[in-house]
Amino acid sequence: MGSHKGQNRVWLAGMLSLLLAFGACGESESLINHGPNDALNDDAAFNDIVMRCTHNSYHTRPAAAWDPSHEYEHLPLDGQLDAGVRAFELDVHKGKGFPVFHIQVIDPGTTCADLGECLSVITGWSERNPTHHMLVVWIEVKDELDRGFIEDYDAFDEVIRSSLGERLYTPKDFQRTYESPRAALEAIGWPTVGETRGRVMLVLLDTSEPHYEGYRAHARGDDGPAMFSNARVEDYDAPWAVVTKENDPRNAAAIAEALEKGMLVASNTGAAGNSDEENQSRLDAGIENGSHMLCDDFPTPRDEGGYWMELPQFFPSGCNQKQTTGRCELLDVE
Image (cartoon, rainbow, N blue to C red):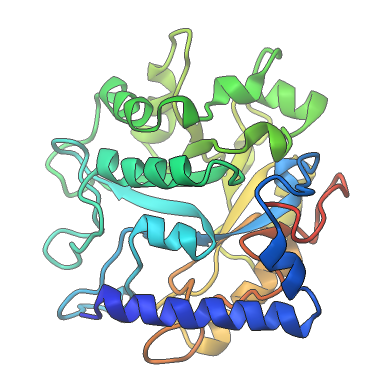
């Protein structure tokens, strides 16, 4: 298993390459001197930007991988945030504290043991870096092999609320003065980067039962659900629908349909087990087609070399090529 020390070395090398890339474009001085309150473009809509995202963000490389798709290892979540990642995916299981890992026995490695610990790491980083643009955490419930499904959604939401506190950005926050999140999206669009700085939004990734309908059905109190929900295409007009995931970033038609509906879109780019050429083509397509979150197994350079999500044109996040308001400017996101 690769060590975190080795990961840190390659991350530092990657950061140096990013700085040099900006320098080659004449932007290095702007990047280095850009202070926390200097000329930040708070007026850009949140869906005008594109951000680095990681797939299975907790994952560590198993000692003996059963499948090539397991051959990757992430830095701890706060290390990823330092490296420019702004969106995550966590696999959550049934059990005390809602454990976070991929597959029992086969691929169990994780940098944070349960949902509360993972979110607390994010909260700690946010406290130290309060001017960050809003972070997104995708939650996939992987309880099919857990001898029963997660049913206590109140307990689930309580872990989220207690771990993030006032940083949590909920569907009710997005709804603002309108009757539903969808109504707010259609009337006034996404909030601005400035309005959501320092916040964290969670999205339930599952689009199958029992959780797709089950989670939303439970939250009927004044506060509503803690998480947004991943909308299937047939539900884009539903009152709660503002976020979706199109796994394949090369599916331009599907992404265009989601963007036309104002949805915030995530896609999977580089993955262990794919060739470098396929990973690069998926990354390029995600940028070109306008996915807001580019979710990758390799956000930083690797010890063994090869593909990684090299995006020297922006750090930590940049302007989406399909931005709708035109208010986003490079280097003004954070």
